[in-house]
Image (tube, rainbow, N blue to C red):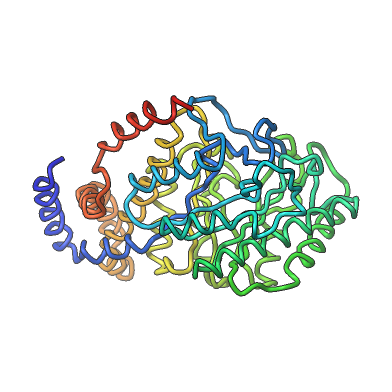
Length: 417
């Protein structure tokens, strides 16, 4: 699309929104401040650099074998740098502990140090990005079905040490980059069949967490992530929603809400306002569950749209840390990244462009027909012309133009790996 065409369309859209009391320029200023935390594991199907030939365990599964998977740290960074050129705005990068710069040598999970991630910190500085971090409890000989809730104290201590070290790495990232790093803790601990010791396992998990969080770190935002169940661990999950909600509230840390970690008909947007009344900040993992936690590429569907609306309408953009979490190996991985990032941005832009003042006026006065009518009309307002303008001003491809860009990258880079 030509710049003149994009500008003309934006001017028309700006006028249309102005009729409803919405300032599109202010909406774009707010959108520019939203930093998504991109997930590095989309580049290589959650393999990491400990054992590139290893298998995923602990309820993690990436399906598909599309050509071009990143095989080393340089290729992961190359792919992320490419994504940056196709997504407007400034964003963060979320790393798992298995993505350290281990120089090809064996480094066990309870031995990782900030030095193993210094090159990531340097890379982030060079690429104007901030970093987030995740401890990694899966795909390890000592993970099995239990880690922090394991009956064996030696195994619990191993994972406690790993997570303490992960938090220290996040602290160093935050310190050097001048932006607190979110550290997300998720463990798959559970049981495939019925268990009679639920209280016992959860008491072990609580004790492990108490040891992990015994020392508060100045440059870390700690978060704990619940899950309904894991693949192969369907009957019991130690870190349930209720467990982590209680733990987070009691200990003054964040809870992570993953869109795929709840019942299939349960929407997390309705939880946002409740959490924000009792927590200073929360963390999100934006994904697309199909049937359940299948981590499909994020698209602009009702779930993501309602999630963005709830955050914006609660005036909570500065209290919600927005991370992406999906991994699709069946299509071009760069394309998956870009589709998901742009879909999340579009959802937040739609929310920012909502005629919320008029909608609240209708609701407060009991004019519910008018409220529903305006909500419906808002769906077809020219928000995409505003997004295209945003892309143009950020000097990234507009509309579907990124498709050919990714096709060239696949031909020139991915297929040569």
